[in-house]
Length: 202
Image 1 (tube, rainbow, N blue to C red):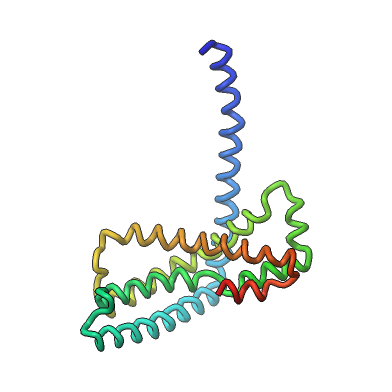
Image 2: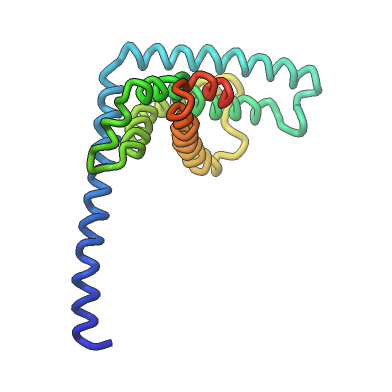
């Protein structure tokens, strides 16, 4: 490789690095701003925590009753595994807004989405990142409450070494759920109503 090729490669990599840096800064600012706004609404966080605890307690008691009636396990899963599964999955479900698809459909019908598409950044990804930032504090709260609840009810999880993998899986599940809801809500561009897609998604 000649000296000119080396210089050209170095100079061409500078804009790419700058672009990647700007993208990371944008992600950090959007997610951080949304997260701080949710954390500031303490009453809303308290309602979500109580609602999560109520739903998890009801589901866990139902599955515990079914497992105890079946000899202490269901399909090979012990009561400890079932309770921890319920606590984990419900944290990812309740932290996501239930009416998100309908809300996006309303924004599409009102023209707000069209206005956001005129910005120099992707309106879709800014919305997704905003929702991720909104859900993260709720997810942390639900996971914390669920951990205490499951530990008190049935003790430690079956395999503690899997907790990091479970944490990553829940975050990815929430993110993919949000992306999927935005994609489903896109039907409102043609249908002018996202309620039907919300029912389909549910």
